[in-house]
Length: 456
Image 1 (tube, rainbow, N blue to C red):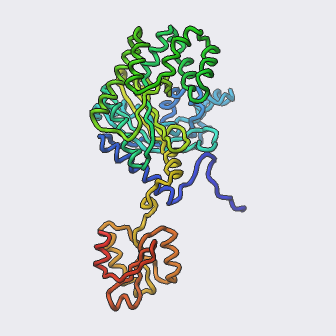
Image 2 (spheres, one colour):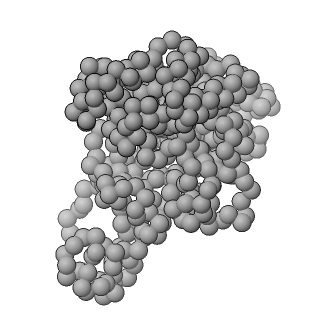
Image 3 (cartoon, rainbow, N blue to C red):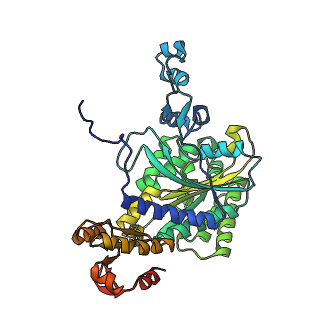
C-alpha cells in the first residue's frame, strides 16, 4: 500500500510550540482583562444543530457553513425525493442535521435563551474558541480560525460601551502596542444623516459609499452616491458631515447643528457624548479615541454604538470591532434583550506583534532550567532537585542520562531554556553544582538550596 503524504486540509494550519506560546500570551492577556471587568468564560460545542445556524448570516453566509453528515448510513435514512432533485439545499437537509459553528455570536444567543433561568443578568460573558467557514482560502483568510469575543446582554447602560473602550485600551497596551486608535460611531447618527436628506430607505447605499472615504476620497464617494440615486442637493447637505474635522467635541457640536431636525440623529450624538463622559471619568487612555462618522461596519446588525480598532504602527486592517445590538436573542424567541459586544482579531494582533517584535522572550520559554547529567549517578542525584524545582512551580526538565553534554546544551539552546545545572562527579562530591546562564555563558557554583532560592 502506497504511503500517504501527510497534509492538512486547505485553509487550516498546525501551530508549533513556539507559535502556541505566542498565541497563549495573546489569549491569556486578553482573558485576564476580560475577567478584571467582570466577564465570565463560557464554551459552546464545536457543532450546533444546522437549524440553529441556518438563516442567521444571510444567503452568502449560509453557503459558507460546514455541514456534518449524519452518522451511520446517512443515505439509507435520507429523503429520496430530496436527493432526486439534485438540489444541494434540499438534499443537505435530509443527510445533515448538524454543522460546525460559523461564529461565536449565534451560539451565544442560543446559549442565553436556553439557559435564561440560570443566568444572572446583565450577563457578561467571554468566549475564545475556533470557528469554521467554507471560504476560499487565501493569504490571511483561513477556514478554521479563532474568535475572541466579549458580550454583555440585558443592560442598556452606555457604561458597557465605555468599558469596552477601556478593555481594548488595557489589553492592547499590555500586549505592547503604543500607537493605536479606537474609532467609535453610532448607527443612530447614520440614520439621522439619512433622515435629514429624506433617504432613510437608502441608508445602506449611503453608508457603504461613505465607508470608502479613506480608499476612494470624497470625489469617489460623490460619484458612487450619484450612481446610487442621490442628488447633488443631498450631497451638498451631507458634505460637511462626511468631512468632519477637529476634536471629538468639535465634531459632536457640528453634528448637532447638522442633525438638529433629526431626533434619532441627536439621540446618537447624546449617546456618544455619554460614552466619552464615562471614559473621561474612569481613566486616561493610551489609545486615541476618535469619533469617525464614516465607520459603518455591520450596519444591518448594530443598532447603537459601532467600534473599530486599528494600529497605527503597521499597515493592517482592523484588529478589533463590535457594537450595540438590540435584539440578539429575538431569533430564538426571547424578545427585547439588548446587548453589546466586541471582538479581538487575534490572528492580526499576532502578525502585528510579530512585525513589531513585541512578544516577550518569556512567551517562548516553556522551561526555565534544564538539569544536565554526565551519567546515571548524576541523574539519580539530580532527581530530588528536579522535584523540588517543580514543587515550587518552576518549569524544569532533567535530560535523561546517556547523551553527551554538548547534545544536552544544544537541546537547551534550541528550546531557549535560559539556565542549565550540570551534575558530574565533582559536583556530587562537593555538593556545589555548576549553574550556567545560557545567554551570557557565565558559570558559577551553587548549592541545591541556592538554586532553588534563585527561582523562588
